[in-house]
Image 1 (cartoon, each protein chain N blue to C red):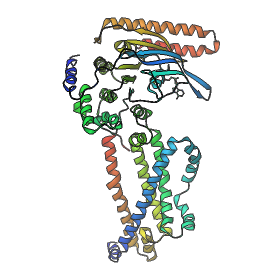
Image 2: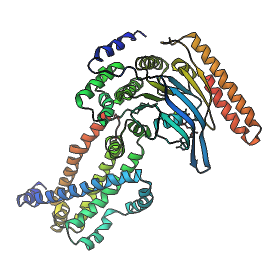
Image 3: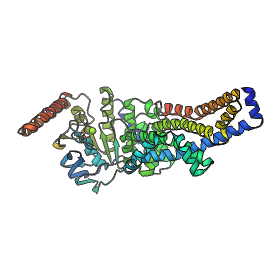
Length: 214
Length: 307
Ligand SMILES: Nc1ncnc2c1ncn2[C@@H]1O[C@H](COP(=O)(O)OP(=O)(O)OP(=O)(O)O)[C@@H](O)[C@H]1O
Ligand SMILES: [Mg+2]
């Protein structure tokens, strides 16, 4: 296994695959956060958005995100955009739904207190509502991360070139079990790394500051 | 009580270079409600929450709103805060219409509502930040307030690291940060044990004496109202309305176990009981209301019984 990995590493295939996958993950997940959190806030705060987009979102979230891949390929061709769409759709909805719930669960007292102190609109949202909802949003972000990783792997395995998913496929084509297992270990390490570098740290902050576990 | 002299001298010492406004209370009316009425629309139609109410609160006065659960005490406080708009009538603060919440009318809630992600110090500085007050002054002011409520040692604690009583003191300090004219307190000590509550009563009384701000304090505890108020506004329920007003002319500072306080509390409990009976008798004509009445009388009895 180590040997197979070392071979792949030597001709740079492994490094390139790791970089490609990581980039796709970061971009897709980043876009999902950037869209999902505002969407969740809007769902919680704007009745009109809830009434129009709410049922749609619940409906869409019951479609496994990889099912979007064929459509995405038709629209965007065999491109980075196609895979990004799948990753974004995979992690956006859990993030939005968790954000919506977290914002809804902010004790009204907290926002009222801020209102009486003179906080309004965007200031209120950024300095009070979002921090108050942060532990819940973090929960959604974690969920979103695992969904992003799954969607991306499925996408890479199925269609898209480059990345660890495709390296897995290559391993299978070559009958190279060691390579397949090796790549799986690399994927595991990537996932764990993100967990321990980002989410576990944020979890500790939440425990220390908010005094609650996510 | 032994802590009485200390903080006052503390404020005097620091008040030279950065004065807290010591006297806000001017002669005159601080808050006035003129035929204020509030209804909510729900599935069953219009629900009258607060029947037409008129009330004048003098500047520097300590008013307690006393009444059973659901009589609209919080609603009235939210109206004064500007968090709710009345269905009918006018509300004025210092002669100006109340149209929105304002830092001039600070609010303290039952469960502190301190921001859990900010340290106590940052909580107190938050309203100052909103007013773009520079860092030096913010720090000076939060230090002064932390000392005022005896929490300076806990400045860098997060709310969850404080006891319930400390959180309420912190919330009071934060409410004072913007030097409001009016302090609105919604059952701020309801969740505390008797000892802690007693200590906080003394603190609130001291702060009231010190700054002469107008206080509107909501409670369903008769003793607490008598302990703190210059005037008690007795409220009844369904729909919420003012039953009667009682002036409490006891001198301050009031010792926690003053016998005269118990007597007044008894009198007020009797007033409540007779008002309840009166209302019950009036409404008992209507057979359909009878079951609801019995529940209501029960809750009032509980109010009196919990003294
Ligand atoms: N947003 C709302 N919509 C409809 N009814 C409401 C709303 N807010 C409060 N009420 C009703 O108004 C009445 C008065 O409520 P309020 O919270 O002012 O009572 P309260 O005197 O503060 O009671 P408590 O002592 O339990 O805090 C209650 O019957 C409540 O059900
Ligand atoms: Mg209330």
